[in-house]
Image 1 (cartoon, rainbow, N blue to C red):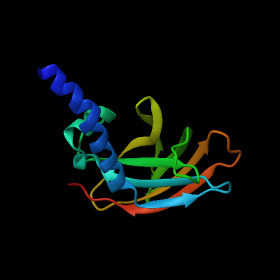
Image 2 (tube, rainbow, N blue to C red):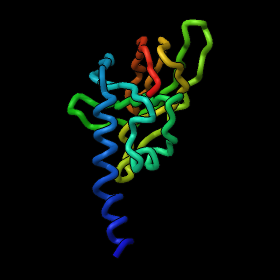
Image 3 (cartoon, one colour):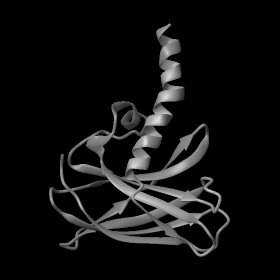
Image 4 (tube, rainbow, N blue to C red):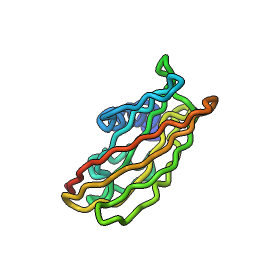
Length: 149
């Protein structure tokens, strides 16, 4: 019986929590040349619910944050994509962002990467997203201040 309950929690609850976490992180979006839209946002890993953190392979810590990228076509469907980029402190120190794909039901949904934060620090992000079928990468540049929980 516990196995059945655990299975249904994974099938129903974890995807719902994952979607909620990504929706909370989706703060902005950038539109590419050919109608591709990339929604993006950041959140402290401490704010992730335990089942979501496990599903993502993330250990919640106050010293780490997560960036999510959600590439979509004009009708809102998820696109296969890769991303590369970095985050730079105002002192010039750079962290490479290692993006990985998050799948739901075997289909790619989002890209995520973890990075370190200090309390009150401003970070500059430079990211390039390549989507399948588009010759034009989507460039994302923004600055954000972070606080430890």
